[in-house]
Image 1 (cartoon, rainbow, N blue to C red):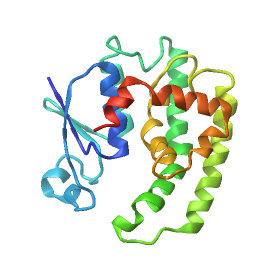
Image 2 (image 1 turned 180 degrees about the vertical axis):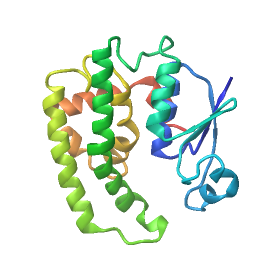
Image 3 (image 1 turned 30 degrees about the vertical axis):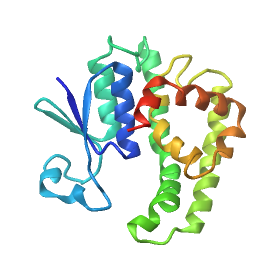
Image 4 (image 1 turned 45 degrees about the vertical axis):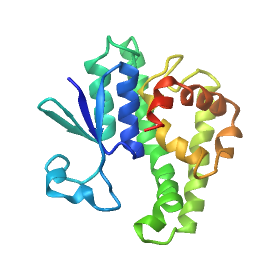
Amino acid sequence: MVVKVYGPRYASTKRVLVCLAEKGVEFETSPVDLVKGENRNPEYLGLQPFGAVPVIQDGDYTLFESRAILRYYAEKYKSQGTDLLGESIEERGLVEQWLEVEAQNYHPHIYNLTLHILFASALGFPPDEKLIKESEEKLAKVLDIYEERLSRSKYLAGDFFSLADLSHLPFTQYLVEPMKKEYMIRSRKHVSAWWDDISNRPSWKKVSLL
């Protein structure tokens, strides 16, 4: 059965699409324009009561929150495509640890940069330059920790590509290209090598064109 994914143009949704591509799961997309407020339509709120993206419909099953969807498909299709969870319970623990690091330590700062640099004008508010500066400084400290970690392993959870790495792709692409802050990646040898590796995966190249 084809999985229906709502909101494909947005970064959080692209996390889900990369996961589906890595697992070889067929999907179709349905656009949701947040600027036009389509996420506040009653029909959409019936799927996602908070009005955010993404949402998936898989037959009669509906699920929202991107990292919950990642975990669901990585488990549902564990033996299909790329194993994104690790082979042992210890590896799974490290995947979950670094996925939480991405959500709690990396994402808040890169999200602030994305919102205020790329989308403030479209959403009708002035960018907060003080917040932009503070967020870049905080993100740099997180990347310093990543640099140390990646000096000891090829990927965040070990020597295997996992959900922990995958979840960084869409927003880091914003950082590197439209935000023109690639120096934050390139100034760190091991982070740079990691980024080159994960951003050149066929799954991401496919999804980034959507």
